[in-house]
Image (cartoon, rainbow, N blue to C red; front, side):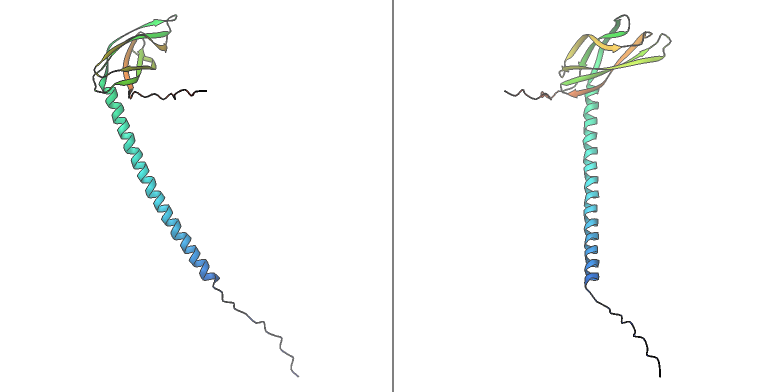
Length: 172
């Protein structure tokens, strides 16, 4: 008598559409990701290009503003125990646009000629187009005690638009 053969396991293959659905979903997600990513990158480059153009326009306007202003007279002296600089500026606006918020840079040298200090202050006034204005006893702040010579230059100015950044008061 022969020994009975053990039962063989049966392999059951279940065919399901899940694999195909998963592949289709993954493909759709990948395509959408590429589309959105491409649009984002393209949009960012366009925004960056626009920002760059705007910055160029602002820099050109700023340079034109500074170039149209000139200091035609500059005198200074030490006050406050010899450590505070007061200056008189006569500024001419040769341009066609009123300018305000004029930033002045004073660079200071010792008796030897060595640059030892500098001060930067803003004159919050308007100099109209074609006008010359004088600003007397303008405080440039503290300076080194050994300053003997000083130069002044205009480094920034803003077109005066007639508007303010201060909101109107509200009624209670």
